[in-house]
Image: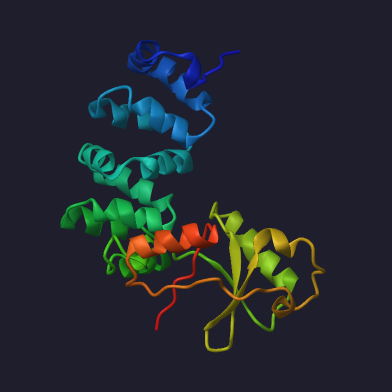
Length: 238
């Protein structure tokens, strides 16, 4: 077996593997355990090589996640080298916040083509996110979320989480809404597992530690994440 750990290879060896024929480079990339390792590998060679190497990553979702993990200048340099069809496949396999980041880096014509590649519902979500400045809560937020009404049960909440997980969408909390779609509480996903399925979600929810409107600056968002040691923050309208 081959251990593809990047820690055991110096840059010269890694560069030699990546510059080799497609079969050799592809075999190496397929053995990497995470898209972050793919990104680390890409950085060893010049950007001109990245499109070829990314095409060797067999899984569309893994390829898209690798692109989402690039720094913005890196992603901009890569997107110039991709054709519209490749960009379309990328955004179709990204969550709305990451898809928005990619589309923001495109020129107007490419943005229109990328948006057309999305399903109508996803296109509407991304178009909404594009209206917000990138350095605000609205520009950072993800449209996909798990929510239930306050009249629903723990089992209903679990079913909603499973539905999204099957779509490869990361979920940390289930948000509880009233009949007017206003946020009244949230439940940690792990917390759902310790309660009976027929229990009402209101009985197990907690009030949100914080919430923000879409126009809040990203620095204030980051400060709230740090203050409360949270990994997700609800964005609400006024």
